[in-house]
Length: 295
Image (cartoon, rainbow, N blue to C red; front, side, top):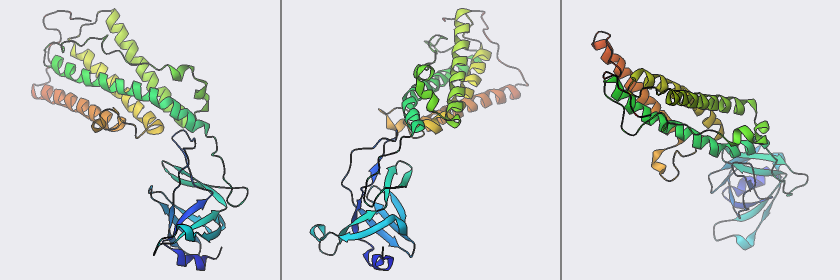
């Protein structure tokens, strides 16, 4: 390919041969689109092209077979052409990559990425369980605040009502074997924390543990916070951009929404410690009336 000649084609709109293949989150090919790319710049070694989708890629000299004009699609003051490639471009959420093809202009099927497919399969379950942990923390916070002021727990809350959502797919799907260590470790640690929270609540429910004991709410808040922070590492691997509530996008992503609840929990605990310090180290009396409250 004559790069000196191609420098005069900067700004031209070109169709790629083979067309760029767009992939979904699981690595599968999306329906083909009739898209054009623009030649952004040409140097002695590289040709940068960009699509209307915002993706761009720098092609090397050996990536390009030839440039062919397309007068039938050209408009006044705007040239259109075909750019035949020795590579197949794959467009993904995190960028564009190239794979050599067996002959110029020949399409290449997307490679099977079993780890990507597994992450996509486990992401919805992770979202469900992680979101439930945030909901649990959001109920622990006001109960901790109430009981640390020697007041009763919030009406309607019980150890049973705080029961976590538990994984089903992760414990039974053979896809778990397709996950690498960097995927399986944070997911396993998060789910271990979820089971620990569940076991604690089940024990308190069965032993009729009082709901107006602020030490219990404090211990539970620590446990759920630790679990959520482990879960954040899993979310970063599996679905970092997933919304907390797709119906209410303003609620933010799973990560931003969980961080907000974690920060509030840290703040109410600091306020409690500051209040104790100001009172000379004294703490509120738990269960002052000796009563038991609803499980």
